[in-house]
Length: 367
Image (cartoon, rainbow, N blue to C red; front, side):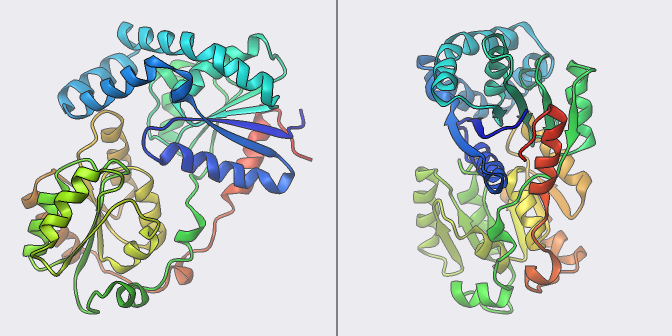
């Protein structure tokens, strides 16, 4: 089947889903494929608001989130199955309207709820190719539904987790995308001159996803008081940004930022990156900086964190100032820091070619 239109099902929980969909759409563009990215959350109507509230409430209570994730989502529990069915029941009519209007040949779900809905489209669109692209290190049940043509994952661990639920699943391992700007980041010297950081300083980039999860203001204060230059990014968390700016008022070695497109520059200026598990980790590896991983995201966050540790050049810390400072010092002592321009150590990967090639496993062609 030759594809000329691709529909990406994303979800407005953080920025990672959209970033992945955008990278895939960019990879398909040279083949003349038109792409459209839609947010599944508005399709859920009032269920979306309830789901968002439940998610944020659970996230603020890690024991509750862990219990739900491991027993109901990963464990395929009755509450997890009920939540999935309820979401699909509301979303499916709107999703069908979207598909009827756009007429895609290919639907790629980068959001778990999208994966649940897409598989039901086969009933009315039997020629439609459905693909799931998951960059988490371990699948939970909502990601995996029989009838999906292809699952794209980024590790053998993730592939095994998909086959846990469906042993006959068609799974391919591909490299996860990293945005082009991270391969064009400035040298450390250039970045520090731009940001006003002394050349001989020890600098730490502190961030935790688009939502700014964790006590970053407390950690930033203690890191700065310990002699580090701190680049603290609050993401879209306005409350955190206000607290960081308050902390920075009495500390000239602390720069507080909100949501910004300067992350490649900030990474390049740093010696260590303190962050939660997620897209930031792949970006940091392109820049060439060691990771101090905050254990602040329960459930899938813990799974992703363990996989990042397995990949190396990373250590884990608790979300306390003392733990962060201790692990940052340990990384600076044990890791030989190198600061050439990223262009000297990495080139843009041909992951897009591998992505397009992998889609052939779903019977999709572009020529």
